[in-house]
Every structure is written in structure tokens, then in C-alpha cells.
Picture (cartoon, rainbow, N blue to C red):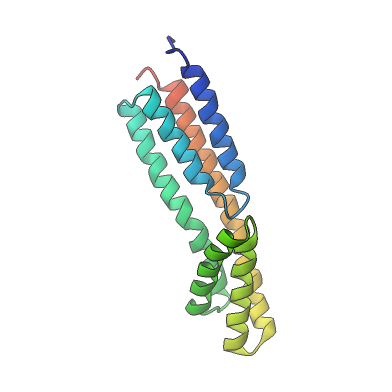
Amino acid sequence: MDLKPGLMALQWIALTVMLVGELGLLTTIVPGLTIIWLAALGYWLAAGFNWVSGLIFGILTVLMIGGNLADNVIMGASARQTGASWLAVLLALAGGVIGSLMWPPFGGLAAALLLLFVVEFFRLRNWRQALHSMRSMAAGCGWAVVVRMLIGAIMILLWFIGVFVLQEV
């Protein structure tokens, strides 16, 4: 294996950035999957794409987009299963985005849950049902973290295979 000067350092830098992205998935504000994707893009732009790396990068792109959408879908679906209205779910998700920007790293989660509770309380006039929907959304958030971390690990593994196993192809 004949490495270009600095390529090994670039591999370590990309891997380190990817691992930081993976850890960032524990919060709702850090776009960890996007960070992993950007590290792979940066590496392959510097090292050069071939058909294998292009194929793997295409798969990474699909995983990144799907993973970034998955948390919203999982959280919303979880709240909907307990009877939360679409209005409450959509407002909670929008509040989550705004809260993430205003009060990182956990302001988005707090804003989403609080907004869901308030909207459901005023809609149903039943704090227990509103609390039940809020708990369900919180559980969905937990599952979303698990799903995103799994997707991030798969992305890193695919990059690793593309760089270290299939590099000669």
C-alpha cells in the first residue's frame, strides 16, 4: 500500500471528525450524520474518488438524509400513537428546531415537549392525556437517538471499508 504523503494523517483526521460527529448524535443540536458525511466528502475530495468510493459516498448520502429525517418521523409518530393531533406534532417539531437554535444543546427537546404538552392540554383540556403524549414523544426522541447513532456507525463503517479494505479496487 503506497500512501501519498499526508494521506494517512488525512485518514486519521477524517476518522476523528466522524467519531466526534457520532458523539454529537447524543444531542439534538449537533448534526452528527452531516458531520460524518462531510468528513467522508472532504477525505475523498482530497484523496480522489473512484467508482467504489463514489458508490459508497452515494450510500452515505442516502443514509445521512434518511437519518436526519428519521428523528422527526420517529418522534412525531410516537406522539401520534397516543392520540396527539397533527397540529401539536408539527408545532412541537417546529418548536424543537427553534429551541435547538436558541438554547443548545437540549433546548430543542425541551421546547418540543413543552409545546406538545401545551397544545394538547388546550385541545383536550386533559393534562394527563397531554402528559401521556409528551412522554410518548420523549420516548420517540430516545429511539431516534438510537437509530441515528446506528446509522452513524454504519456510515463510519462503510467509509472505513471503502478507505482501508476496498481502496485497491
